[in-house]
Length: 233
Image (cartoon, rainbow, N blue to C red; front, side):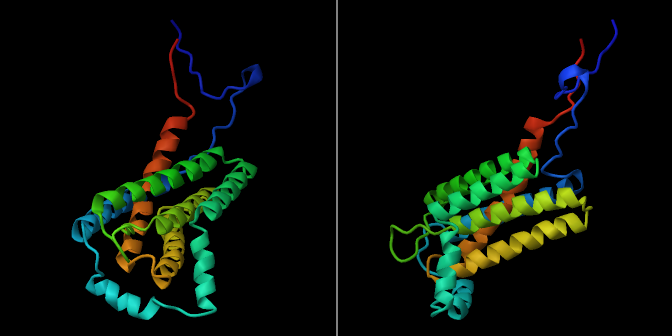
């Protein structure tokens, strides 16, 4: 019996459609895979060190002394950045990113934006209850920072989209992705510490959560939607 190769996404008339580009380019998989593993380890170590804690550590004290308690107009800037992680601001950001991805004909990136943001927020919420670190009272769980994880996650999605469209290689691609993640994490982290909502190490934990979650989610999106699977008949 002859073997016939069929590709997912065959259009009318039997002509194969161009497969959708991956959200995690092959040139970036190895490097970002290592980063994701290291970031996950960092989150776990931080959770172990700060479990049940309610006081800042030595690093927190030093950084907070420089950043905490900003006055106007910087406090207004911090509040504006913080709003991006609040429900209304976060929803608007995700919707804008999804629309942008669809306009660029990158449906997988749109799925990644929603999935990775949801997973990152869910992960930080679960970890907060598990770790039990608090700030300004027992009811304020702080590790890791969900705001920082959320904004960093969306920045990673944008960076992955840009790296794929530009065709960046094994050096330039990860460099762009990590630089973008660092900028977003630093901006939201500064806002959270300046407003007294988180310790600096909470921010670091949120940043690492995004670095662990987003590449893994991107890989799963590509794996689930992979075109060109062969089957025999």
